[in-house]
Amino acid sequence: MASPDAPATYDPRDYPPVAVTCDVGVLTVLAGQLSVLLVERGEAPFAGGWALPGGFVRPDEDLGQAARRELAEEAGAALAASVEHLEQLASYGAPDRDPRMRVVTVAYLALVPAPPGPVGGGDAAAARFWATEDLPTLAFDHATIVADAVERARTALEHTTLATSFVPDEFTLGELRRVYEAVWGQRLHAPNFHRKVQRSEGFVEPTGQRTATGGRPALLYRAGPARTLVPPLLRADPEGSS
Amino acid sequence: MASPDAPATYDPRDYPPVAVTCDVGVLTVLAGQLSVLLVERGEAPFAGGWALPGGFVRPDEDLGQAARRELAEEAGAALAASVEHLEQLASYGAPDRDPRMRVVTVAYLALVPAPPGPVGGGDAAAARFWATEDLPTLAFDHATIVADAVERARTALEHTTLATSFVPDEFTLGELRRVYEAVWGQRLHAPNFHRKVQRSEGFVEPTGQRTATGGRPALLYRAGPARTLVPPLLRADPEGSS
DNA sequence: ACAATAGTGTCTATTAGACAATATGCG
DNA sequence: CGCATATTGTCTAATAGACACTATTGT
Image (cartoon, rainbow over all chains, first blue to last red; front, side, top):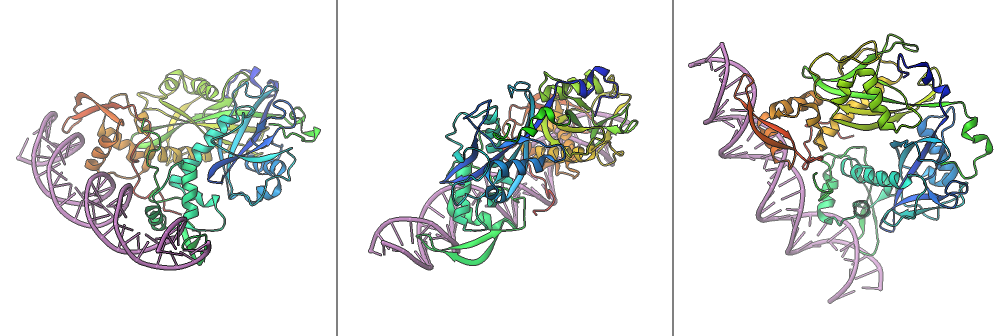
């Protein structure tokens, strides 16, 4: 780790202190909109502003553990328990990203099904989901982190089965399709989507049950064992090729 | 960042110190083998062992800058200058990953063309490329980081034009195909590869020049403006779908 | 009947993957 | 020539994308 013959002046103990935090971008699909969980800050800096849930990593805790703990503390145990997927997103460490001191944050991406009621129960003064298309001003560099989280989610849906993390245990293919439509921001052709999902080995498994939702009852499915989608489900036009 | 009402005991200044480092996995294709640059450690822990180039992030430096600086210091300016692509890979922060103290490392992935001569010129006692299939025992958790870097490179070649980072400015499609074969560890059908590359808008541009290499002279190409590959170039069997 | 959602059939243009064949250098 | 590598032609099975159509509920 230490450069083998770094000058003695670079003993880390001589450095100005560095803090390491974890921030979590919790995404869900709410009312047809890809949404992210934000908490209202109670203290400076950015007191009263909105930020991602997160906080300092404790001495004996791994980074992923810290992300889960902070999520439970700030957004409530119920929401933390509903997290179906948690992965590391990226780290952000611009020297001036926190006015108090040097802080490097390791950001995580979490996916949850739409919560049944209002979120809360955590320490934060307020916690709610915001449509990613209509965000308030965010503290620190959290707008960048959210943008990166959204982009990661978009590509994850192409190559993995993670879309099932946005729906309840049992779901219809229509619900799954609406997840794709919300995350990608584009309409999908229902009949073709139906077949492509079923052709992807291990993506979904029928339960045998049906639901009624105002039209013809739909078959219910469960997430299958596959984690990657072969072949991938590609967006029509990701954003140009260059 | 700070949990709005975290107990006062979690002021970061009270914590045992945390250090932040950057480690760089420099990949290249050497002698038909996907290879990674390792440096021999001069000091404890793991003195005499092999590790990724890297070191402590300095107070006023961004994470990516630290990665570039450490690379130049430990592997020589020539190699650092040949880096055609540098991206953040992931962060590693298990509490006991460094025996000296709590160290969180932000790992970067760099891609370079095969170096013309031996690497070196840096501070490290020794620096050389090792085939990723035949690595020595690595210090810290660097074996995990290398494995993640290799996996990232494999999928990057499917969806991006980054394969061109492994070859010189001007190259033949045969050289490009051999990069894919080395990184993916599988043979590719030359005629079909040739056409798929040319059909991918903006992947490569002909220079008009030719080379002779023992067979029919090949046309030389340059990297095109595209950064993403549409359609993607998919591996035959990535590793199963589940 | 009509609206609404689910699901199937089928056609066509495109593509992937395999193989054959040709091109052009070297000894 | 014979060998090696590059490049083009072409065929076939599979796929994507579009559209028409049928199915099953509630009002």
